[in-house]
Image (cartoon, rainbow over all chains, first blue to last red; front, side, top):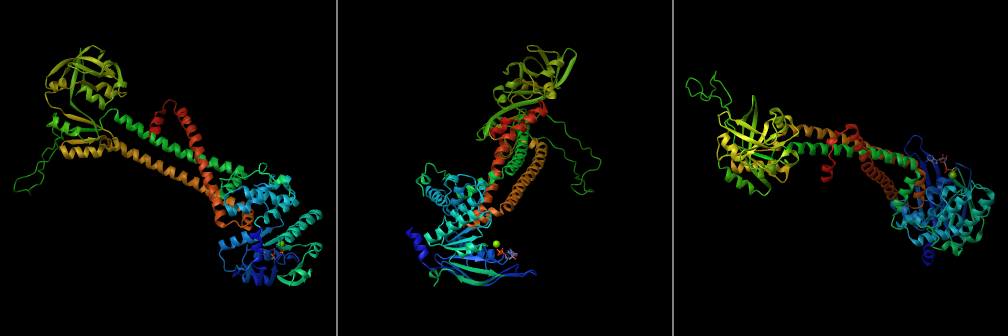
Amino acid sequence: MDKLEAKHNTNDVVLKMQNVRKSFNTGLPNEVEILHGIDLILKRGEFCAVVGPSGSGKSTLLNIVGLLDRPTEGSLSICGEETTRMDDHALTRVRGHNIGFVFQFHNLLSAFSALENVMMPLLGEAEFPNKEMTERAAMLLDSVGLTPWRDQPAYQLSGGQQQRVALARALAMNPALLLADEPTGNLDTKSADAVFELLRKVSREQGMTVLFVTHDPSLAARCDKTIKVVDGKVVDDKEVDDKVVS
Amino acid sequence: MSEKALEASELKTLPSWQPFEWIVALRFLGEGRTQTAFIISGVALGVAVIVFMSALMAGLQSNITKSVLSGQAHIQLQPAKETVRPLRSSNSTLAVGAVVEGAIIQTPLQRIDSIDQWQSIMVQISEIPDVLVVSPAAKGSALVVRGNTSQAISINGVKPDLYFQIIDMTDKMVSGTMDLTGSDILIGIELASDLGVSLGDKIRVTMATGADNTLTITGIFDFGNKTANSQTTYVALRTAQSLLGMVGSVSVLDVNVKDIYAAETIAQRIEASTGVQADSWIKNNAQLFTSLGAQQSSNTVIRLFVALSVALGIASVLVVSVVQKSREIGILRAMGITRGQILRTFLLQGGLLGLCGSIIGTARWAVGFVRFYYWFCDGRGWIIDLDANANR
Ligand SMILES: Nc1ncnc2c1ncn2[C@@H]1O[C@H](COP(=O)(O)OP(=O)(O)O)[C@@H](O)[C@H]1O
Ligand SMILES: [Mg+2]
């Protein structure tokens, strides 16, 4: 754990976005700018909700933060590393080591069991399976309460269970930043609450920064900070919990 | 966390010798079971066709080679034939060297020529490392008379201990023995039935020169060829020499070599060093080889196209599966899997499809095809010589 703590301590600023713009179909007649200059700074351990109407650009924002997509303009650094000039291989490395994802749908590989899904990022990194990664995956699955379903094929799990497996997998590499794009969007209130609490707990225990997209105002209200995105701009930047913010 | 979850004995682990790409490729292939099965069958079928075509060609070649070589030596040394030359003018009214008009051009009657210094040439050839055996023979034609029937035959005077190393007669003998001494003669079954003779009977052989001899049939053979069975006869070398009026000399030296496909090169070497005309079986059957070559190239073209369509089949399945798996690719990319790893995963799937298809195709379908072929040809299965293929 010392090594992991060190990773989180090297820089208190986990995410720094400056004037990020994103256009689709650049150079074509149907060019359209979706994000119009976003500035965002997230520090270690911050739990930030992203709200806003659908189509406002929340997913686009998360994909850029998660290095799945590149900004058209502006700068983006993750854990102090400027990413805008990196090549694909370097981006993949930063993504693998620092960022965990949980999406709304289709988070799991249906050809693998719950345990194997959680192992996958570790396996991709180490190339060959080993006992330690199997044990770590089992431990993570246990922490989301899914030990009895460990060997179930992913597609046989319920929606809530799948999201919990996805969360366990997102935590496998112990990322500094966790991106959750409506992870509770298609869950019933009870399961949504359970997944949210789990996220909250992990964030608090491990000092993990979380960017959490939700449509549920009651969940947003329980976060440290909420940003509201409308038409590709941050219109409201409200700090709910004073003690986390400088 | 509970202790139970950490118990390694209870944990199902992935095989530790399989790399990431291998594990994912196998799972993806397993997931699209029907598709995988179809493409493997397709590849197997294509490979089976290729294997079958190759086997057919190889079998055909080896059978033809075998049947050609069962009746002739790899290399035959003969004195050069006399050739025809037009009469050239030496008259001053015509340009020197001009052909004299009206002169009759005719092939000279071929005398039975003998090879000069054949004993020393034989020793010389025997010393070439690739040469297995050299056998001298005196050959000529004769007439066999019995009662009021007479028939033209060709007399082959040979040294049985050498000659029957060149042409293996053991499985061709219908009755009698292959030892040739004194006035023994071996004849074919066709001739035997034409003349109405059998083992131990005597026949009278007459030459154009008037020389004749009465010989005893000590063996009857079957070459599986009507002309050969009615015309070819074997006598001892001395007997033939005296009949043909060429005592002490031979008309042919038969040579067998280790590598039958090197026969032409060796023949050229022999010709260069001895000055005697040496013809290899390859040269003698040039036409056969040309048609075999044509067969071979059309066969190769077919195989090439089948291989191409198999490759295209695999490629198209890969392209389709990349599209089908775009969601999975997205998930893998999001968890930090590199482009290279994903590319390798899909290439590995292609490789595995090709490999499995080839193995199944070679094993299962090739056997099936051969069986079908034997059944279809109903006893004409000689075209495929499985032994010959196995030995290749
Ligand atoms: N690849 C793309 N090409 C063109 N337009 C896109 C693309 N991705 C998203 N968009 C557009 O960007 C806008 C924002 O989408 P998105 O970020 O998914 O919104 P949200 O997640 O807030 O609902 C939408 O109008 C969508 O149509
Ligand atoms: Mg969205």
